[in-house]
Amino acid sequence: MERLSRKEKYRRKRARARVLLALNLFMLTALVLLAGLVYAAWRYGDPPPSAHGPGNSAAAGDPDGPAPAGGGPGGAAAEAFPASPSPSSDAPVRRTVTIALVGDLLPAGRVAEAMRREGADYPFRKAKPYLEAADLAVGNLETPFTSRGVPAENKQYVFKAPPEYAPALREAGFDALSLANNHILDQGPEGLEDTIAHLKEAGLAFMGAGQNEEEAYAPAMLERNGITVALIGLSRVVPEVSWKAGPNSPGVAEAYDTTRAVAAIREADEKADVVIVYMHWGVERNDVPEPYQREMGRAFIDAGADLVVGCHPHVLQGFEPYKGRWIAYSLGNFVFTTAGLSKTQETGVLVAECEKSGECALKFHPMFADKFQPAPMEPEAALALLERLESVSFGADIGPDGSITAAAEGADSA
Image (cartoon, rainbow, N blue to C red; front, side, top):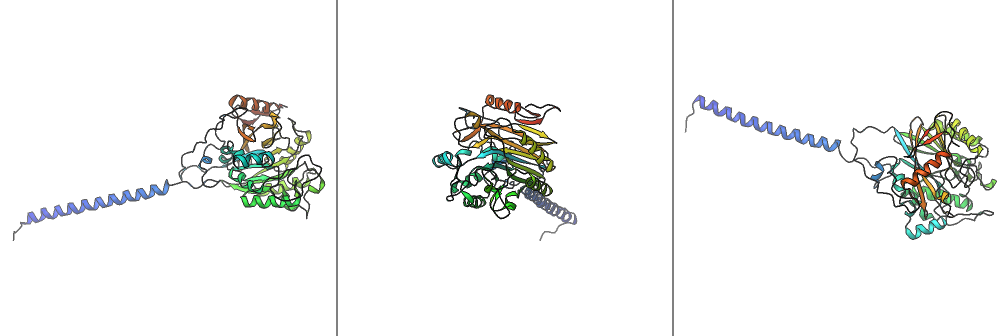
């Protein structure tokens, strides 16, 4: 056997130590890299689902929706809404809630025929990106969803929507609907009862009507981004006294006498960060509100409302700031049968971006409803409509991008 000198033994011992050290360093480096990969996967993984459920990645984009692209008489379809990058866990937490607000919805009559022929989503295809982009979307349902009931008498128009089209409103992006209007009882109490049942089944909140007074005046309470929104539906257009909700009788939340309405708003203001009132009022096809609308809108804000949104005139009316809050006097038709009057086809989506304090920034996206299908207007037509809306507003400026701001003190456009 070879005998090694002490020096040679020492040299070989040092060599083995260096090999072991290199192996240890290699293993340590590998562990650090693996830990880094695990951390990165945890931190930059897939984002949580949107407020509107799976399949709506477009909703994560600009909260005010895409830029107008076509529409109006002879206009083209809206461009596809672009998806936004996936947010990371260190992205800033949103401190506002965006609410898309529209006017009258009538999935009945000729609109229902078009839905049957073209698909249940037909009326909403070109406006859907604007509805989905918001945290919440709200409209006014001008018909009962029912297959039974007794048609109301002594009315020029009596509506009845197929129950199978209720889910189409949810699929379009809507979260809540106001039932406080002059058509929700077109098929009697049975029609109202069925409507409530079908909306609940479709996952849609509602306000403004119910099986009794308490339910009719109760707000729909929804929460997004840590902000609670209360939606109240009221009507000052009621065909007959029997339509008014009573302590033990079904009907709508009426506001001819504002005592009950004001009490409901004050109660909601104590529970919610943002209070929005959907108000059915005014004169059909009038461009400007009646004096009582201005008085009532201000009274509701004094009671605690942050935004009052009007329906029923079937045409757009202007806006008014009051004590740092807003009144939108009429959002006109959205999806509705029309008689060839262009003003009844002028419509749009009002987007309110509201803070937890209740202050809301408004932006209006002009649209034109051709064959019951609202679509973004072409730039020239959109600008003309915005200018007209500013001319019938009270103390409000409307920019070319649809942004609505309070005018200089003392200004009163209408």
